[in-house]
Image (cartoon, rainbow, N blue to C red; front, side, top):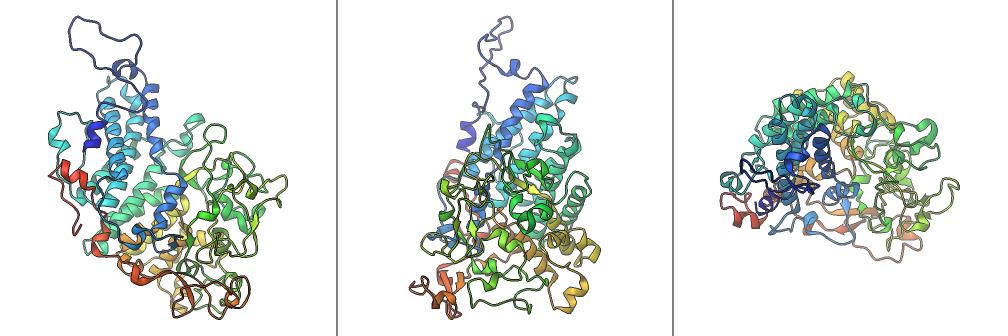
Length: 568
């Protein structure tokens, strides 16, 4: 709460001065912007709302969420991944969220207290503020569970709310849904946004985020025996509304980009970034993004050699081209050679991870950058160097920009592929079944793009597959490094099973790695199957308490009404 008080009198982007209440004195400053003089037209409300778009994370921030899950291994161990972390005095998510919630509350209050004749022109900015308030609360409650709901612009006089107890998880979820419903009712559709407004929050964006939040809480409740059907139905309805919009379609340009089309979805730019010359304007899959512009605000580069590495568990999720898992498919070529496990697999495998002995490009260091006037220049050959390329034998390339700076791919906050996945999962978890038609309308679109046959009831039955497992497989692969994996395990209540598993890499014993230089002289820790072990199961844990993160201890000192999450 200390951070809330700190931000009560300081608002980003604006400098307000305190006005006297003296009746006959004109104390309106002539050289400063005040509250009364600033909010004089709709453009001012829009300008204030612009700050909210900085709430969206960068791609690397999204990736960091997956980095603490079970499908990524680090060069060094980290306490979040292995479950050894302890409560800390401060937490940036808590502090920043409440500071920003204060600003959304402020704008909502200003719109509600505006003159009646002005309200129709500024209603959309109130809706934007309600959307972002819901977005901030979703991130808070997803992390901590029930948190204090603050729905007014706090002042130092509001001691009751400044030092309030935590609201229940159910109340926070309902508050989020109510805010999103209010925003959906007012926001323009995606196609109604024109000119400089393209990229602002649309009706479909709010519906998509509602579907995400409803699925999270609906499955959280279901797998804890608390119901959840109503929320799952809300997820179905909200995702279906987006799916029925004519504004969006999956990005699938295999006609000009071949099997690397999926990789380029995340690299589209304003400047040349692929052989076909496609730009951001060719992408209708992104529903909501954090916008970048190479001429105004380029994106930061990342060194590919320091990226955490995918694990064996993740690599094994990719199906063979017959649509079967590797333990069921006759097309799986085994692990005897370095390349064999990459053969006959879902095309996303070679788009998400680098195939050994192929060329890889990256923006940093500069000599690895790609120049589309000479597309074969630059880059480096991925030779599976365990000293500086990969710590598991697998190298991530999803989201790794290939061209040298400056560049500016947008960050997908939510895209149509996720909406399809939400729809399929919510249907199955709500009804206990999903029809072939519903599969065709959702995840089979993703499978088709990946070169896989459709998932049908007959295919599932004849091959002994599990519907839930296949839906979750699609989600894990499709949304890799977009910040969902750990939270998926938490809401499914499978984290206590999946997270303590060892983080392993490629098979070493009895393979090309063990028999040929330069790999055969490297000493690895190995499991019973001969797989490289990056972190042993004995060093990993996930207890019941880990399903909620601990509140920052400094907040507990400031506000005795707050109670720590169980067992922390």
